Image (cartoon, rainbow, N blue to C red; front, top):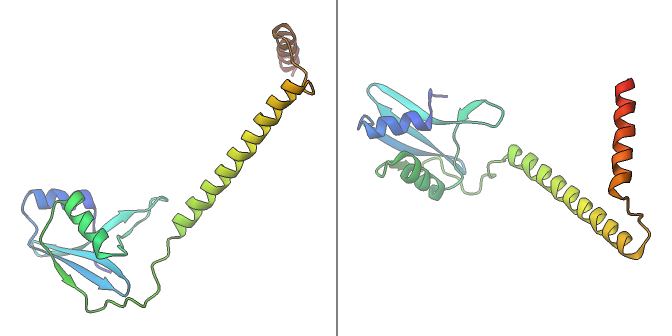
Length: 151
C-alpha cells in the first residue's frame, strides 16, 4: 500500500498548484485516487468513525467525480480502468450496516414510546389512568428527596 494523504492536505496542494498528476485507479469494482506531487505519490485517505486512517474507496466514477470537483477542486485527472471488474463483489460497508441497525432500533424505540404516550392519553380520556394533581406531585417529589437524603 502506498503512503496516504488526507483530503484537506490534497486540497491545499491543489490550491497551491503543486499536484503534477492525479489518477483514478480501478481495483476490481472500486476506485482509488492516486496523486503525484514533487517526487512523491500518495493515495487519498479517509478517517473512519473509529479513528483509523485507510485508503478512501469509491464505488463509482460518479462518486469520484463529485469528490474531486466538490471537495478537492481538481477537474483534470486520468482514469486507469485496467483492473476494473464490474462483476466483482461490491465493497462492503460494515460501518453502514451497524449505523442502519442502530437507526432501526431507535425507530423501534420511538414507535414504542409513541404507543405508550397514546395509551396514556386514551387512559386519561376514558378514566382508566388517574390524574395526579400538582400538590400530589409535590408531595411525591418531597418524599423521594427525603429518601435520597437518607442514603
